[in-house]
Amino acid sequence: MHIPDGFLSPQTCALCYATTAPFWYAAWRTLKSRFESTTAAYVGMAAAFVFLLQMINVPIPGGTSGHAVGTSIVAIALGPATAIVAASMALLLQALVFGDGGLLAYGANVLTMSVIQAWVAWVVWHMLGRNTAGIRMGAAAFVSGYLAVLTGALATGLLLGLQPLLHRDIAGIPLYFPLELNISLPAMLSSHLLVGIVEGGVTLGAIKALAAIPEFKIAEPEATRRNVGRWIATALVAMVLLVPAGVILPGLFNAGEPWGEWSPEETARVANQPQAPIGLARYSEIYNAPVPDYQFGRSATMAGQSFQYMGAALLGVVLVALISFPLYHMQQKRLRKLREQPWK
Image 1 (tube, rainbow, N blue to C red):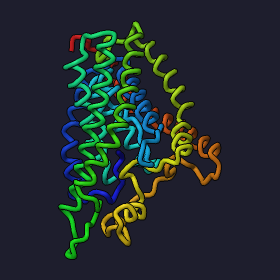
Image 2: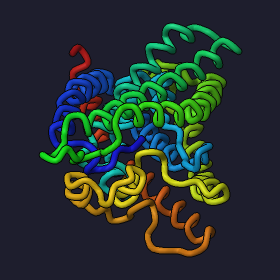
Image 3: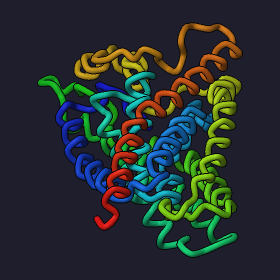
Image 4: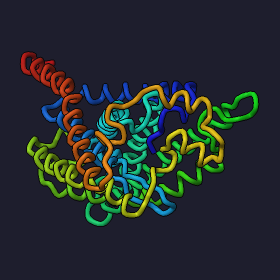
């Protein structure tokens, strides 16, 4: 679901940034207003969780692969504001360091994988699962995750499929993503009908696990005690160890890249064109990530690729911690003010 650079026109990218900006602003204002002692830590751990979960690709029928997103889990557990900020942090890190998703397309990826999924999951959860327990809570969590990822896939399919309708050269050849809505929408939705099962299952398991922790209050981070962080940190360590499955499983089943996350050459092949569209080829080279595809170098063996993938996961967690530090610093500054002027 990560849209690479060149797939969307600069105009579409600018529109996506403009659409996303108010949600970023509102989410940031919400977080600032509740900077309790644990808020910054939760944002950082949530961003690391989303980052790691998206590294675990699983094969799906048709010769492609897909991955859960994780935004819905954070939205249900900690609220949509935390989910939007945390997922945006993870997506920025993926684009800048690992070349997973583009920089020009970053606003579009935040819109489809962060903003839309956070709010869909939160709304569905509050309609079905709030103040529930047992089987009903699990079902609500599953449906929330499933519908969130499906809605994000729908938005991605629309953005991609509109490009050849909006942007062609004088000869009628698409300038950017070349496949129209009649291909992009069915492809994105059909693949994510299956990915949604993974997303829903992971959401169900994560919410049930969090609900089983006595100190944790679903969607009430200000009421949650600090020692919950130990449980989440343990889960992050386990996820780092599981990350190599994102290399091993697609390799075992000979599964390719997720639909639409192709190189310019692969895009031309899929579209049955002699070469990649001019705009796509031009903007796809706008930035080269230092650790492309989560690999530090070429490796011919599955074991070598898996170790590099795990190394990239560890690097990502460290970078998330560094990105989160300004939040922690701002939080501590606010807490010191409250202690000095408790009446405000």
